[in-house]
Length: 109
Image 1 (cartoon, rainbow, N blue to C red):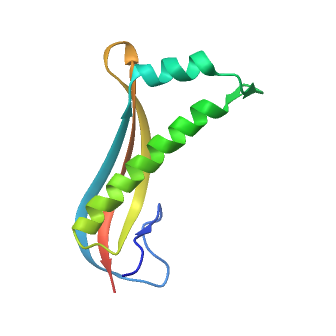
Image 2: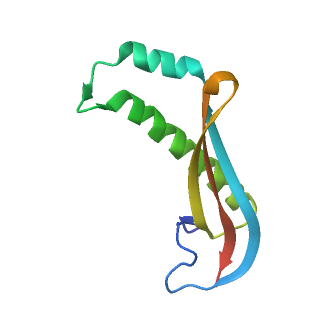
């Protein structure tokens, strides 16, 4: 079985979408405790950047994309096109951060 193609573009070069299977999404939500732990232990801030914070954000983004891809595979998709990633603060006092990934699951010819 070929690997699922995930792309931000509306098409897959050299391939035709033969069936649109629907919108698929994945989310990862990080609570305030994660931020508190990160900021309490930050020692690697250089030039205004935090490697620890970036690692957590990268992990959340990868989890959202993985969840989206799993849902597409469950539909029998060969690809997810038009993928968009968004970030939002949620909860009281914006104490949680959500990373979302959404795209269209398709079968390719």
